[in-house]
Length: 211
Image (cartoon, rainbow, N blue to C red; front, side, top):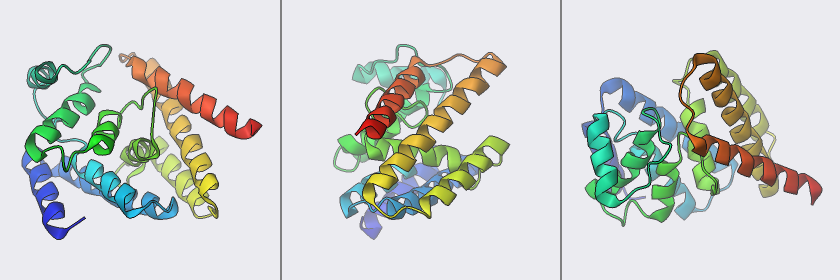
């Protein structure tokens, strides 16, 4: 990623959010840098992941009505989305509007659009952003802290690429289960994409164990 592109991404993100949200964004960016290194991503994969990290919450602070209008304008399927998860869908479209499809390519778009719930199909980039959004250093909730410590402990022991994928699948599933438990306990609405992501990860983990 060139310095010009990096500067543009940071400036655009800063323009779209308050100081606290931007600090979180930079935390996700740093966590993605760490994960990209531990998972030995290619330069292209790393650039896509770091781009997605910087823009993932660009629509988070937009009014819900405006987010819905953005999705309607692009024909985005928002069925089942809650007020807490809509920004991942509107954010992917909004970022592409502001930055263009050269920067917000399909891999970046996919990661942003799944960073809160996951989905029925998840690339490694999708999973890494999903995890980093939960485990970045600014997250002080006990479950986030414990998950971050667990993730980093596992990552430091990675030797082979297949081990990295196993760790990422395991941690992503743990985050999803923890999130679902929290939503049930608090009586919050459950986006069905979370269930889809759980089923996908459980199937991938089962297949890996059987191979």
